[in-house]
Every structure is written in C-alpha cells, then in structure tokens.
View 1: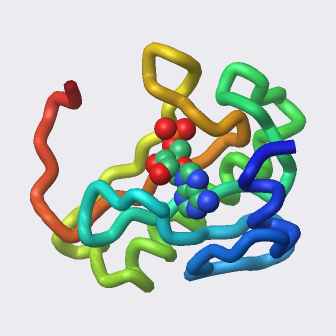
View 2 (view 1 turned 90 degrees about the vertical axis):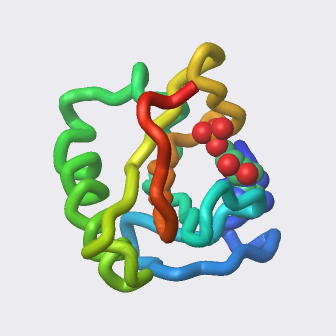
Amino acid sequence: MTIFDKIINKEIPAQIVFEDEKCLAFRDINPQAPVHVLLIPKRPIPTMNDVQPSDAELMGYLMVKAPEIAKQLGVAEKGYRLVINTNAHAGQTVSHIHIHIIGGRALSWPPG
Ligand code: AMP
C-alpha cells in the first residue's frame, strides 16, 4: 500500500485530471514544470522491473492515455516529456508505477 493507493481510494485528496476504471491522472504535489501530472495504473505494480507479459495491455493503455491527457492539458502541440523513474538511481520515491507527464516549458536534455 502506497500513498498512490490512498489517492486512488480517495482517502487523501489530489487534483485529478483524468480517471477511468483502469487508471488515474493527478497533478504532482511538487510540480517541476507548469504542467506536471502523474498517470498511474489502478493496479499497483511497484516498479517497471515488476511488469509482466500479462501487464502488456494495461501498459499499452497507459501509453494511449498519456498523449490524450497531454492534449487535454494543452501541452501536446508544443511538447512534453513522459518519464518513468525506476528504483534508486532514477530517484523513484513511490513504489507504484507512475508516468510523469511534464510540459508547459522547454525542458533540458539530457537529464541530470
Ligand atoms: P518519483 O520520484 O518518480 O517516484 O515521483 C514521485 C512523485 O510523486 C514526486 O514527483 C512527488 O512530488 C509526487 N507525489 C508524492 N506524493 C504526492 C501526493 N500526495 N500527491 C501528488 N503527488 C505526489
């Protein structure tokens, strides 16, 4: 059980921008850009290393939803970044897969 399960269960508040039966998208509490949303599966997969072949449909679903949400948030045309941090070296702090949707300003590359 992570803090994201509590957001899914509406036990703690979040600024939800999209929800359906499979996934939830909400604004990051510590935004790194004008638009910073986290898209999560409702099924609690801890990290990308835990993704199984049986998760292929769900993971593909998230990849379809991410650009739809980027369009909804008005960043699709100018551009945005999708990030999935995995484990310590990438700075993953919540053990529930989340896709960062980051945009609204020019982003530097490569990441630090
Ligand atoms: P990561 O470092 O990739 O694991 O990202 C975790 C993200 O979750 C960070 O960007 C946090 O700011 C964000 N976060 C943590 N708690 C909350 C919360 N209660 N509501 C919204 N975002 C959160």
